[in-house]
Length: 215
Image (cartoon, rainbow, N blue to C red):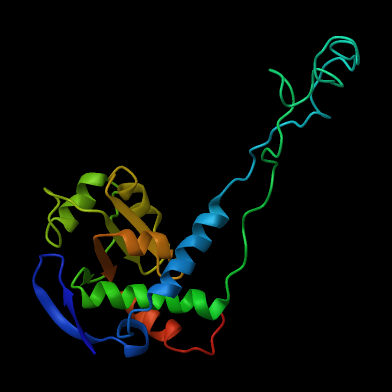
């Protein structure tokens, strides 16, 4: 399939070949759901912790006599029914992360890329950089590609790890950035606009179209 490359002036520059194995897949909602949930689970800190009755600091004496008071028997004030007592079945530190099969993860990313392209939410631009690292210079470039006056949640896919673009983009609240080999399903799926560099599309064609390569 063919894709159009837009110049930094906002004009159509040329057509490029996009692999059907990366940008022309049918939409697989299940694998997208699993990939997003996997990323959210792996990002959970899992440090929530409560104390049970054996960990609460306090006296071990009985609150009142076992018999003769007409009340139910109790062992100590650290029981869960007392204020300041232990918590029954409360959270403990745990690791929520789990591994997702490599092929399924790669399929989810290719499916989302296909979805964005088919829905007309992806724009391919010629390669560029922001030598000054200034936000205003990056906005000037993007203004010819997308509507920065009424911005939507946008992800910029870079052809390489560019610290100057990252520096310029971090002050733009509606703009996120991903390197072509560090894609995240959650960010891609929920973006209303995807701006991808031409060099990134070429690398995605080469890498993801070949199922024999390691990720």
